[in-house]
Each structure stands twice: as C-alpha cells, then as structure tokens.
Image (cartoon, rainbow over all chains, first blue to last red; front, side, top):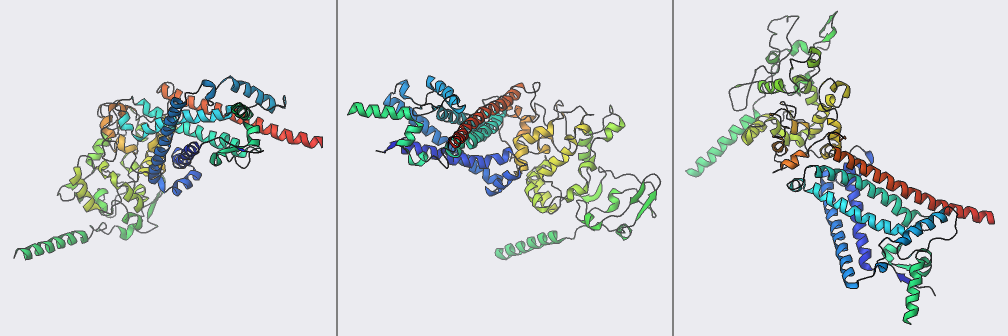
Length: 230
Length: 338
C-alpha cells in the first residue's frame, strides 16, 4: 500500500520560503550594481524603481533573510537541546557514508556499476546545499551589515575590513547565484528524473516510491522502527 | 495703522523681489560683435593655420555660462577695428565686468586659477614644455561645450554639489549664488565630472609620462562609488568630491585633500557624505586596483574568491554532466535492447 512520508515540517518549509523569496529579491536588486553597464541588469534596475528604491528593497529583503536564518539557528539549537540526538541521528552532519556514496555514484555515472548509492535522509548533494547556504549566510550577512554601516564598523575594525567585505559580498553573491541557478535548480528542477519540479518544498511529503528511489536507507530504518514498535 | 504699514511693507517687498527677478540680463552683445561674427563664412585662411572660422554660433553662445559676459571682457586686446591679426588667448583669471552677487567687486576666476597653478595640474618648471602642455588648463575642463551638454534634469540632480565649488562660502554664500544665478548652467552632473577626468586619467598612454597611479579610473569604477554613479545614484562621491575642483594635489602633499592627515575630513566634507568617520574608515577609501605590492591582503582575498568560485562550479558542473550522461546513456541502452 502506498503512503506518504513526512520529510519537511511546516516550519521547515516556511524557513525555506523565507530564505528563497528574499534571495530572489536580493539578487534582482544587488546584481545591477555589481554589473553597472549590463543592459540586462539595467532592465531589472528600472523595474525595481531605480537604484535609490533598489537599495531600500535590498536592505529590507536582507533583514527578512537574516531574521529567517537567526530563527533557523534558534530552531536547530532548541531541537538539539530538547532531543539530544546521537551523532548518527544528526542527518545533516557529513560522515564516512558520504565519501562512500560519492564513489558509488561516480561508478554508477560511469557505467562501472548499475547500483545507485543508497542514501539516508540527506544525500551528500543535499548536505552540500545545506552547508553551502550556512557558510554563505555568514559571509553575505556579515559583509552586508558591514557595508550597510561602514562608518560604524570602521570605528573598531581596520579599514581593510570594509574593502574585504565589499569584495566578499560581491563575489560570494556570484558564487551563491551560480550554485543556486545551476546546481540547485538542476537537482530539483532540470534533472530529467525530477523535471519539472520536486514538489516536496511545499507538500512536505514524499511518496513510498520517491522514498524508495531517493532515500532507501531512511525508508528501511522507518520500517524497521515501525516493525519493532508493533 | 500698523496693519496697513505691515500690508504696505509686504507689497514693497514683493515689488523689490519682482523687480530683481525680472531685471533684464546684462546685454552680452552690447557692442554688436555678432553683426559680423554671426556670419557663417567669416574667417581667414593662412598658410600656417589653414582655414580658421571666426563664426560665433549665436545659439551656442546664448546658452553658455558666459552668456551675460560681453565679448571684450575676455577678448581684452581687441580694441580697434579692423582687429589686429595677432591677438592674445583668453585668460580666465582676468577680471571681467560681472559683479559678484550683492557685492561691488569685479568678478574674476583668479582664485581658481591660483589654486590650479599650484595644483598637480599647474605649470611645473621641472617638466618640459611639451609635458606641461599635456596637462589640463582652465579651458580644457571648462569648455563651453562641456557646460552645454548638461541638460536641465542633470542640473537639478547635481545642484547638491554647489558647495563643492563654493567651499568656504557657507550657506549664505550658496543661497546668494543660487538666487542670483538660478538657471545658469554651471553645475555638472557627477557622471560628466568622472567622464571629464577620465578623458585623461583613463588614457594609459597619456598618463604614463606623469608619475601617477595608472589604475585610478579603473579602481574608481570597480568601487561602490563608481558603480552606483553609473546606475544613477548622484549622491556618491565623484572625482572632485575627494580630490577637490582646482587644488588637486598628490597624497604626499600635506595640503592635499587626500593626504592621510586630511582624508578623514574629506570623507565627511559634505553633509550628504559620510559623517563622523574614523581614521580607519578614511584609510579604506583606496580605489586603486589591488596588487601584491599595494594591497596584498585584498589581492589574495579577491583571488581566493575567484578560485573558490571557479573550483566549486567546476566540480558541480562535472557532477551535473556525469549525472545527465548516465540518464542519456540509460535511454540509449534501452533503445539498443529493443
């Protein structure tokens, strides 16, 4: 019998929404300044109401994103304290299995094996996505806040920090945009096995078949647990 | 009755203001020079200079900054008719008949010319004549053509820069100027200032003969000020905001606006700039392109990000490519089996 398995709670799905909506706005209002001579970004800039409006919108969206990230940190911290999970139960922490999965996947890609790696709750691809955003948030929010209040921060930080923040904000933004539109979009949209979209971001659940294909180890563990509690 | 006096005084005041506003502009062509000089064919042909036109395009002149200055105020040695064959070039520091607003002193550009003379752009006795010639004089930056291209929109946006040319005059000076010269096309848009300075400073071949940093314009353009200005944010600093308008001095000169002792004040010189900046903030306002010599930390941070981005994207692309390859390969294999 087919049934659905919860993958993301409502809170987790909303955390994702409050991350990607500001992300899109930040890209649209930030990149026209990174590329001041580009015709394409000129169009976006005028759509945003010119640079003066864009700067205000950019800071508002940034505040929403930072608050979302702060909430996420509290959310993770609360759950760590409340549930006190073992290291094996912290599914986002990279471990030895990820290394083995990478090798298995490469063998599969190169037709050296017909067995796809059996992933647990989070594959190494998904762990990469999570930690890339985690690192990116510190770089982008940290440098962004310094650039927002450069006079204030230079009262106690050396002047070169502002210059570093300027480069970090601009270059990390490029990396984040490329990673999202190429890597993340391939994995959740353009991958022909997924196309047109993985709906888990709003449904929050995966079907039995999807679980079997994408997270067989987790499914196995869920079933074993249910068997044991019977 | 006090009320009547009050009402009368308002009327008188109104009359004075209206009279002042409607006072006809000084007749620039009072001496009727354009009787001849409006003729398109007026000119001479000499073996040395070839054809030289003496036509003054009336429309261009009427819209220039100097539209109220009579011709002979600047062309001072044209006193006889027919005019002498050899006449001196116009010198901007000579006093003309225009008076300063609400003052009776003759107006001249001597103050500006003096500042220019001791600036990096001024005459340097150690330089060859050719090298001195390669530096901008008054007319290089202040050609009427440059003024004329400013449209009214740009003028409005750049009016906040008034204090740049009227430094030290205070608010009263600015108000006097604006009230008496409103409508004059004298303020340039920031983007035009950058374009003007770049006309020499971005020309590597031209600048190589001088001992200056060749990456200044490129450095400005990659900095926030340069990028935001291109996107139309006029409140950001243009070249003159930090380097002054006439007294452009190298950073080593203690009188320079960008000398380490003064740069802190320069950053907060205008109310719309950065207020209450620290010396650390001022020390960050470098706009040259980082190299291993001038700013090694920034140089390596920048390259670190380039390598990080290229490396990450290369790995991600490879993964996508292999993943997609397996999918295509599976279809191909299935077809083969059929």
